Length: 444
Image (spheres, rainbow, N blue to C red):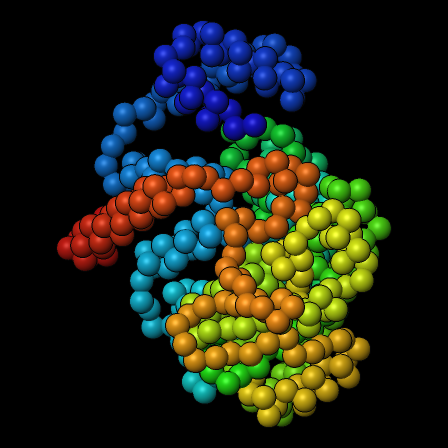
């Protein structure tokens, strides 16, 4: 519970301060089970602090609201709204000197350093794994290393960030770190630094855990999405999922399926490819995560400006059998959920050797489609017929709660206008502050 937001909303509604203090003290007591003297003093202090912040204006205190909530726009849900918001983030960052920048919507960023590239990425843990810190740490670490590998980089270090709400057990920090270092030690990549904080400091009650893990690697040959070329073929490995599938299993009554997600197949496969001469013939790689194959193929087509065609009959056998059985039982579209499979784009002439190297690691792989010249488009071929393969408003609803909220707003186009207005305001603010910094010799 965010007590600061609670007070802001009630003050904005014109409620009496003493009434707010009384009601907030009751809410605090429900969570902390603390004595009335403490809860009343705490509630009164929160009201005082919030009142002190009212009326602040200017670039450092106010922002242009979009009038659109994160959830209703689908941000973080790996669908149309999420992709739209991320492209606006890239627009705010703007063009940089990076060899691979955020505007290319790739899995990681890269800068040139001598004859090699330094590659960096960061992934947030799955929010629904808050009560399962070890799984959260394991899967987010595997995810961030995947993002390095698919850019052609060899990982050299990990860094972490963990935030636990005020009432969370300290042990969550340790369990989360154990999950991170399990993957790190298996792949010989050290965890070298990090940050540990409370979510919202004193202002957020409860035991929610959130955090991220980042990684830095070195590459000599980048396999970014923009290198995709017409005439290439698409190869995909078998996937058993990661944090998303583990979450679906836990919250849908299939906890035994979680075991299928505890593997390092993806990382070991990429490692084998990078060490093999055939790696230099690979044009692009990505992990099937962002809204599933629907999301990744769409984003790759947009970035590479190509038409990408996927054959459904070749993708289905690449879903781990136990995971597939669960998804079918829960009526979850496997094409719209993160499978953590490896997707490779390469010339047809290299496909057999790439497949041989992958299968030598014990992982199944097969050709699932091809890249064609034409307007950017993602196409799914089912029973010989072509179908639109664009991402939906959100990724496949993979928990009971997600099935409830899995609705597309009829006002999506209208919401986009508000989001565009807010992102443009952020760009204008950045330019104003940059101008002031330059005028004042790099200090405001």
